[in-house]
Image (cartoon, rainbow, N blue to C red; front, side, top):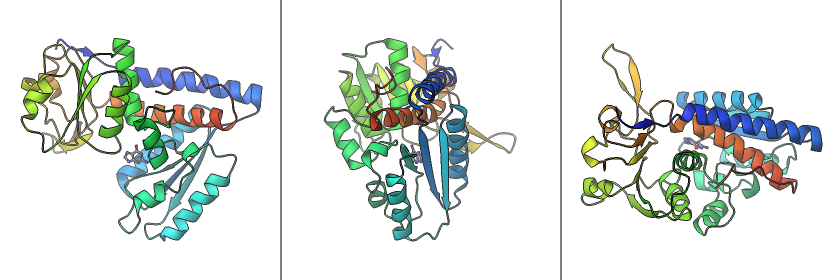
Length: 297
Ligand code: GUN
């Protein structure tokens, strides 16, 4: 292995400590406690794990956590009523509706019912538009976490060639907007891209966000490039159990790349830390208070 290992776990711990310190100050100086509401509809096992981790970490940084676990057959009108109540509740500064929602619910309708100022996922159409036009927005947590790791590593990213593999609304598109905001030359590649290996080989920065286990081989990577692996894929392991791998062939790519995030322990821990940072940012904005430096894009 020649690549520098980008330690997302350590960066996330540092970010959480900064958030916690500011939460203490808000309580002592302003009598405020940031509050995050997480809404989970149904019993998807992976979603339950994520929601549990979000609640635990919210409390650990001194914020208030509110969980709303609703049955899988919840009517859309009832979910919308829950969101309206959270929008109106001054104790709540951030609202997150865990995705995916059961198929009878319209995700776009539900997300766009959230007050954009409380949309700590950055998925509301207003925040998407603000980010896309380079204005102050709530920024989606996973791309924000990737950006923080890149800034820590490189300082300025201006002029770098960045290739984002994957065009999802949750990662690929907002990631491209953020990199453009950093003055990178940005390409979004996807399943229909012609000669994907040649496109990725141009990149100084590769963001892999496809959800296909180990699909990026070493032969696609320019020597010395920085590789950010957003994938979290569970695959069968030799011992009959399962193991987590990213979208990148870590063992091979780490011999070529200049720096690389591992899976687990890379981007994953940054996502929840950025959710906490966004909740703090939303609380400061709601009360007209100065935002801590460096917590958003
Ligand atoms: N499901 C998978 N990733 C996410 C995320 O970032 N936010 C929400 N709300 N649901 C998700």
